[in-house]
Length: 609
Image (cartoon, rainbow, N blue to C red):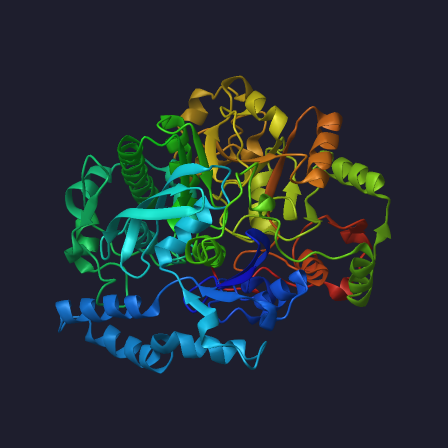
């Protein structure tokens, strides 16, 4: 049985194909269209999924959409009516689009799907609720036969937070918190207030938080959110504008904090760092209360997480260390893109009642579910793009790449199937030497063209993780934060300890300063030989050269650009920034040997993310 899952029309559109309960392909539309967070119908992603399965749409048993548009419309309409006459402008802008397209999503989907099958039957289309899609994406691919499931995001139809229990092929949501009360929207409101873009800048707030002090955490708890001991909560909506207006916060919110909303190009100050630290502290506490309550209610030993808030790896790390659950598994595409996977799996198990085999591992295949290219195809595509490259044997390519990294060159690394989700995990990655005290700043400013304060993640051999970090469990998806081990840290001088804000950035804090954040934390990716053998070999070779089993691993793109998908994308990005070396399959490209006429300027080629 084959089921195609689709998420679309809001942000991060995606498609996924499940065959007899196994995820065979999944990809975000943005990777093909090169439009960050592309919300459009994912025709390219669907085509990729069908081609990977060797199937036509007519041979697909069902197409599952990741939410129920009528319920979402009900929520919007009830909100506008309840708050009228406030929000008329927002209502006026939203209604024409809903009445023209979104309300009649079944017809809209059939219209788009006719591109693949002229005779698509209406009964083939299924709709799952948004939070069920998230929960299914977390539980069914997890390595657990039984687990509690917590989903937290901005909002689906009505739900913003939901708790469920999964066992075998069944999943039951038993508790929800409804709009407008939302941890995701609270965090997004502070993202907006500190001058970053909602739905993409939240991770910047998380990265900025360690530079500040949580001076405003109590202010947030006193005025913005009433957080109960069991983790349930309500927001005081008189400070927010997202129900009725066109912004996240209002003037009363700004007066509470004593400053206006920061403009995107305005200098970050200690105030903004303190606000970031404060909302992160509040989120950490809310998530801990929710997970403790869930553990107490269910008695479950395992926890699965999904929804956009589950991408907050700082909070995830605190939940793991809290120890209320023995094991935690987080969906790598925890945001709306992962809803495509969840919709397909919910349809297969919940709607069709198909059995789920006893899990023996992770059903996401390391998130390596996207397109791949043969060596012959790579050489042809690079040649047509004008690239100059050497073709090496695989062992030679590994050795040459490891040596370049040991020489502290910045390397673009393009291998195998593209990752599904927001993280590069060793298939479409930019790599660097974590021992370099200047690597973080150089990669941010000269390669990624983004803010210097943003931290980079370490990719570490799974067998060595406990020697370098205060973590001894799998973290394959870069979704757990843990501290660098004390013996790997370096003592700070009194002058260094007295530094303030961004001035802390250039202080080397450990033996691997490029991946050690200013609070000694790191967003860890463990690399297993079973899941990603080639990347594991590269790390092993780097360790043999340097004694260090860790590499800087960041996504292969520049600020505002989707992660590269094809060899051509990789070459263009390589020629548009200051990467030193590009490795695509067995092809090795040196920047110094490329045609200068192909040089591009990527420093301002994409919108602020």
